[in-house]
Amino acid sequence: MPKVLCSLFGAVVALAPGAASAQYLAPEPPVAIVEAPPVAIIEAPPLLDPVGPLTNEDAAHIALMNGIVVVEDVDISMWDGNFEVDGEDVTGEDISIRIDRGTGQVLEIDD
Image (cartoon, rainbow, N blue to C red; front, side, top):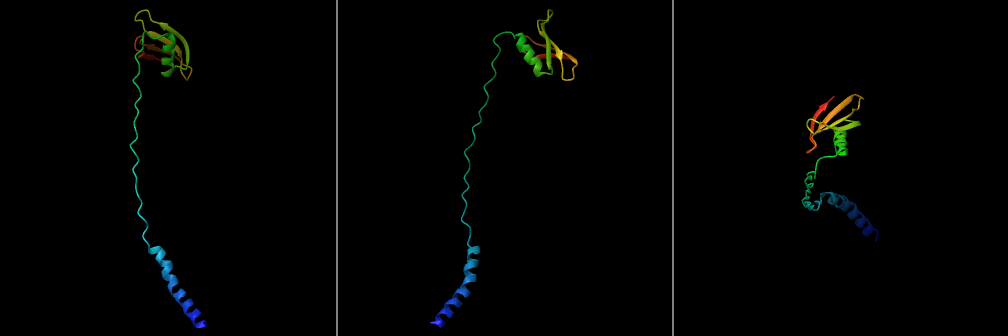
């Protein structure tokens, strides 16, 4: 019996390095690359045209978006019918913005 154990132990010692290296030589399984479905691009709806002429509040909001920090006065000009918004900018300087009453387009910024 001791001879059988010795030969069995010898076989294990002889085959162990081969079994250990076989783990490293085995090729890795193939990886399936799945492409993601295309992403749907959602466009913003078109902006609606104003129903009528802009209000004083609309002109004040447009002026706030274009450099005025403090709105002091919103008037309608007598000579062209457009808004004149007076106020202050970030630095505290007086600023005046002319806004088209029908379209809301900024016509002039007077620092």
